[in-house]
Image (tube, rainbow, N blue to C red; front, side):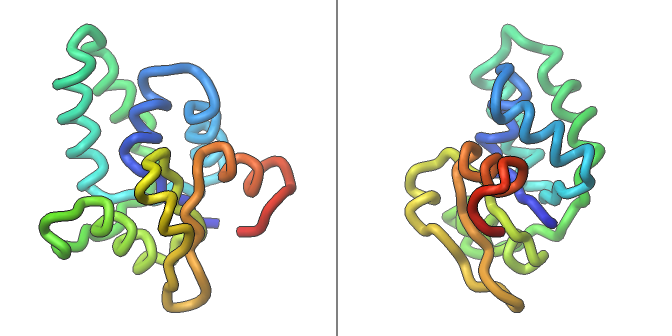
Length: 136
């Protein structure tokens, strides 16, 4: 299983206790997480900008980040990081792309070389991966 978490899921897991945090911990334990340097860059920028009161957050993020398998970033499309991340995840044969972004969730799935990568919310990802519902 390969699971790619969007930046917003990583940020939620880093800053708040709850579902995203548990999703990151469980996927880390199973060795399922893949990601790209673009997610790390975005996460650091948002943490510095929106959560300056939590200076420990970047270090916490980086500690958990070490458990991910880094995949290559894609340069296109230059003007849409969401599409870049989805394309990179699909090229790396991710099974799930997990996001809280409503625009991205509307895309639902992306064809990849072998099958389809589902685009799901953190709650749906949890159901698919750990509650025995849905398909991956």
